[in-house]
Length: 501
Image 1: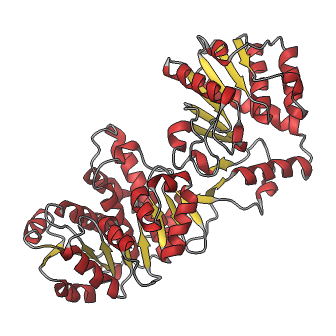
Image 2: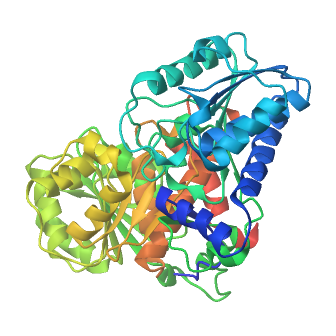
């Protein structure tokens, strides 16, 4: 894998708290100065998104997140906005920098309202500065009521700005603690939080802006992080230009196994994706009667009808990589083919129904495969409910990699990729238009096509996920609704050639 020298690092609540403390203790930047910097960044994000806003509502909590909110409210007053602030309980019981921020707001002429509903009435913009990253239990009482009131204001047309993280969203996992604020913009500070970009995070965070508050680079030097996302430089290194004397044999032979009765399209999508990212040869082993039609539709594919599992042996001998699962089904034909593939020593990319069969009867250990489950399939592989997977996606991805000794790709909003050592990557590419049948098949073929070209499994999995999501984003230029997996094939080819673009 190319060196991850140019990446976005995503942290959890504990790491960000440690960074914050390090900046204060080791680099001598007072916490109140950091709070003012956060308020400046938050207010700039607010004005940038809603430049005509006049009526500002700020919901402040009892910690430093609330302190940020009080200072944002003071900046609103200084800009001649009508500002209403709600705080649960007695603000005089605030301590430290949060109390100093409250006092600054009061000195600026601020007043508090009696309820969050009163503060939010007729607001142009609602600011969520309620809870921050420290939440560890479901919302209740005044906090729950405040979150619900902010969301109602958003539904009625107010803009919603979350300070650091939407209240109710877990900073580490992207899970929801009962309910969470649905923000249009989240101004996050010091370090990017993994929970903002995976699970429910994208739906609740909206547009995310990161402000490091002028923290010194040295503060981040040896701080561990939860996940990383490579950038264009990394992707270009992973997908270098080809030698001028290259031939098809240099770029591998992908065998796609699947396409049971009525599901030939799934296998074809996977096979075409493998071709579009540069595999030299692609064969398809499919259900009897479908091979001729598939070859006619895409003559570059070498398609064979499989009447018995033994028919697969000659194809396995020639394959560099096997992709199995798209349209495979779970009948005896499918199970026999999967058993034959698992007996081979070829590197595998395994998806869809193949994963469901594997979940029923765990196969012998192997170390040369990539599994690509969606949350439902991941739950079956781990013996838990889909909700349990979504409650802690990073832990689920790591558990899949460990249990199956595989590179594990946990699909969904903020797809996660985990290896057996516990290293985690995330992709923020992709859009809701991808919620359509066949997108997973496209990813299977993309990863298999990269793996066939001699790219190592970790790089193939991470690069494949990034290419897949970016291709869908390009294809969604005409709208997310109605996006088809086949729409992504042309942009997939372009993106797989970063050195040429």
